[in-house]
View (cartoon, rainbow, N blue to C red):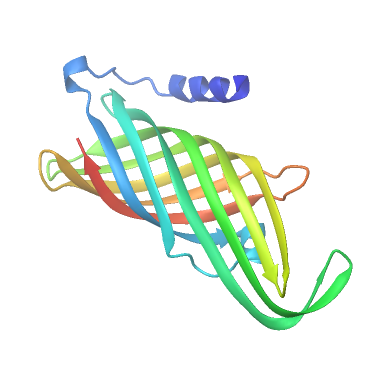
Length: 199
């Protein structure tokens, strides 16, 4: 926890921008549909594109061009590996294998943004937090399961557009990099998000 606070404080000090006046601070709540594509070791376990995911975040402007917030997501990955002979734990088994991964990232977020006169906001930033992951592997009558927490860094770029004074639409791409533990290798994936914001 101390490490997390230190990193967040250091990131804030990097930006020497003018603090936003209290009356100018915009607060927004985003809800979005999230799709995912595994990379690295995650892709080795499930390479299929995921169409199942959901996320939400709350953030507020703290400077004229920067915001802080927090968010949580849920991405579900699934792949039918087909019938084959698979080796696991020094055993060779034949059958159809099904793989599942449920990823629950939770982060504190810092974004730098630039608004334009057309109502568009371009932003880039990163989240720092943790991911609770559940991996399941089903084959014949057997199920192998593992679950753990991993430290997470999640850089993100995106754009939002004002469709009314109270609402925006959002598009973003996020790279969720979960660091390895003693039992589970690094699990990383790209998340493609589209949703709505509410002021």
